[in-house]
Amino acid sequence: MTRRRAYRVAYDGRGFAGFQRQPHATTVEGTLLRALAKHGLIERGDGPTHATPPGYAAAGRTDAGVSAAAQTVAFDAPDWLTPRAFNGQLPGSVRVWAAADAPAGFHATHDAASRTYRYHLYAPRESGSDQAPGEDASEPPSIDDARLAGALDRLSGAHDFRNLTSDRTGTERDVRATATRVAEDLVVVEVTAGGFPRAFVRRLVEAARLVGCGAAEPAFLDRVLGPEPIDGGRGVGPAPPEPLVLWNVGYEGVRFVVDPEAAGSARAVFDERRREARLAVATTGAIGDRIAATEGSTRDDAGTD
Image (cartoon, rainbow, N blue to C red; front, side, top):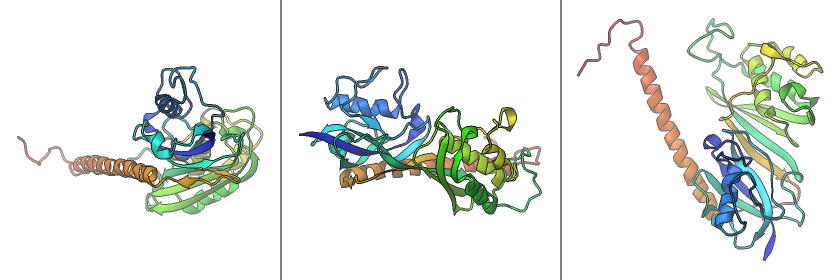
């Protein structure tokens, strides 16, 4: 039996040229469609004219490098296509972990009531140094939590965000943005709205960061939210994509059921990637420490072969 089904998809976006399928590029959507082709559900799953199953739609189009915990795709699927079955034709970097029976005519894009992103912002606390904002230094400027929170509060609410996206239409949004410090050098910025224009979340994070580190005064945000365009060097470019995660997509009346085996597989994959990242941090940190230990000296006294 075939019915409209919605699937939760987690992926590490660092190896993809974004979510949306593209010719001659590896994307998350292309990877999902190739898996459906291997399952025999569509005729082909690659190239610029991908086949898609009936009713197919995705909740959003994440940029290159952006990851997801709960991207959502929906289409008419057979009962046997459980999350664990779906994963059988997917690489480890893309994992389906929950599914829901959806009403006929359900559309993963248009029926989304809310979308939430989380940005993992490198934000060391203020150290009390005399470094001026914008100075070239080995460490990024510190973040004042109160200034960052105030900036996000100013950016929250209903506004025309034309200065925080390259889109020319659909820039009026009602946004909620908050920050939570989770480590001495890490703040999670959470942004929720019904939908987002292009690269909006990363530009919002960057605008708030500029205020939080003292590179811009809070009054700068009045200009950002104003009707006049901010061009050139005074504009707000997007923050890097890799720390951004599509965290959740909310739907009214749709109940997702976690597939324990698929969720366990996803957790194992991302735990392994976390271990690899920790080793990379330890290795690069050790190299930096090794060099720092010799700074100010004209010779390396560690010995030679």
